[in-house]
Amino acid sequence: MPRWDVGLAASGLFGERLSSRQYALGLEVGYRLATNLWLSAGYNVFGYHDEDLAAGDYTNKGAYLRLRYKFDESLLGSMGEGSR
Image (tube, rainbow, N blue to C red):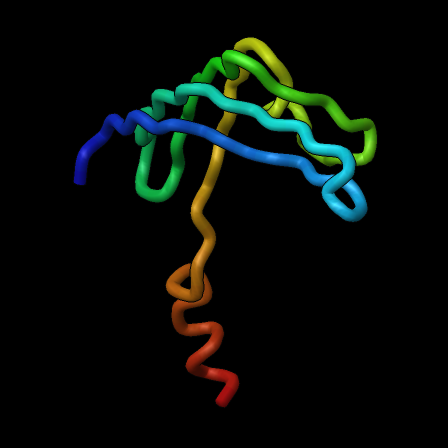
């Protein structure tokens, strides 16, 4: 499994009846620190900000850091099997 990844980040925010539209576009580079744990750095060439969005830093114009972890059913392991 590769330890590095590169991505293109694009997002859009659309208002009621599409009368209000905002977009963000940027690049991101990530490094796998451990199984399912990634540290990423990115830069949005243009972006938007909305007070109602949680974790809106990823859509703002400029640089950002992100730490992400992948959760899935395998994390539950024997917990899910024993309760049947």
